[in-house]
Image (cartoon, rainbow, N blue to C red; front, top):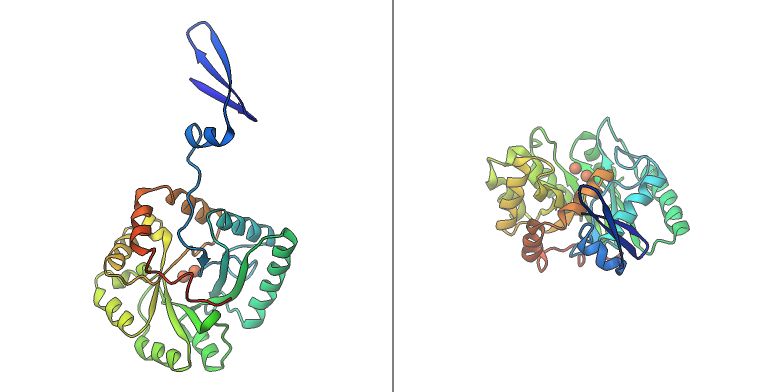
Length: 277
Ligand SMILES: [Fe+2]
Ligand SMILES: [Fe+2]
């Protein structure tokens, strides 16, 4: 049996070997979407996304304004109304400055207004802890998130020598470091005590929602589950770079795994309470 959908008129086609019988019926579109097509997308249980690469043209996330608007609409569709844009600041590859980020943000802000999107936004960055970023910290060329939070990331190869002292210095400057996707640093997979040390030192943890979908591999998945069980997850983030992230998040929202994460984290994470826009 197949079906066609034109407005609210639906034809069921019952096929036998020789004949096809068209049976017209009228069904409300919502009903059809839910029962015959695919499930309506579920919503996230929080409204603030604190990690994304939606600013156009400044890293390997969105490459132009049209893409940025499309990614924003995807996120709005699953319940996000507050965005903190966190483009990469990384030595050699994405040596962004407060000025380069602001220029991109201004362009996007205008496009958001032109599109009539009813959202709150702020921009900051995802600071890779390397010589370039540390130089920017030394010169106070940093764009913090609202309320002086700072999204930082480690090298994916190895932990930076003297990481604890560096983080302490950042805290002394008055910033509140959030470690991006702690689950993705494979070298912590067999050193879970480092998670405890960092978290006990006041470093907040932001896990990528797609890590729970296996999007970043089995090690990141296992680490994310461990962090969840230990109550070490303070924020969730999309870390959205492109349409594939969008689609994968939307798919993940209809899984049982997502429901478990929602139940565990909905009264714990700080996405909607930590920032004044
Ligand atoms: Fe990252
Ligand atoms: Fe990121």
